[in-house]
Amino acid sequence: MDRPARITDVHELALGMPHVTVEHAIDNPVYQVGGKSFVFFRNPRPDAVDPETGERYTDVIVFWVESEADKQALIQDPATPFFTTAHFDGHPSVLLRASRVGELTRAELAEIVQDAWLSRASARRAAAWLRSRDVAGGAEQGQGT
Image 1 (tube, one colour):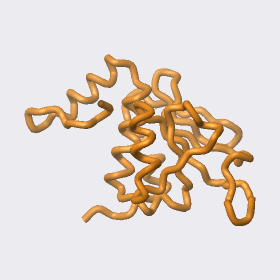
Image 2: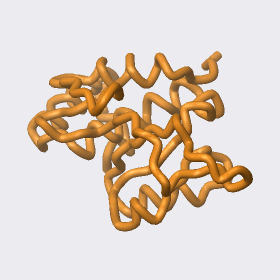
Image 3: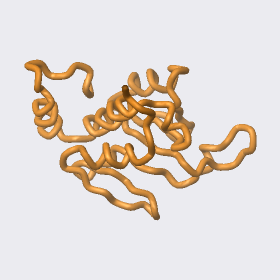
């Protein structure tokens, strides 16, 4: 059985991808591949606020996505906790509050992190990683495509 995801899983999954480096923006980790961010923990900003209290969210995580279509699929699906703000209009990323990460399973979170990495990794690194996952004679479908 897959368990609910945890914040520690975000860190472990991001660090588990190849060629990852970690930078720090203020006190928040920014996971990068080839100098390109693919997951980062965002500082509180005025565009991400609680609709009832108006207080800034202090726990927003940003995940890159491959395309606008991928972004829309995640934010328009009421079964997912992903969202966006006007600040991210036209930006290939989705947002997730850390307080809602448990609404995903660890496997679902792994797919989000892997897809984020694939969207930012070089074509060579992405192809090598996908080949390394081909343990059953056929590459996994839907990984970053």
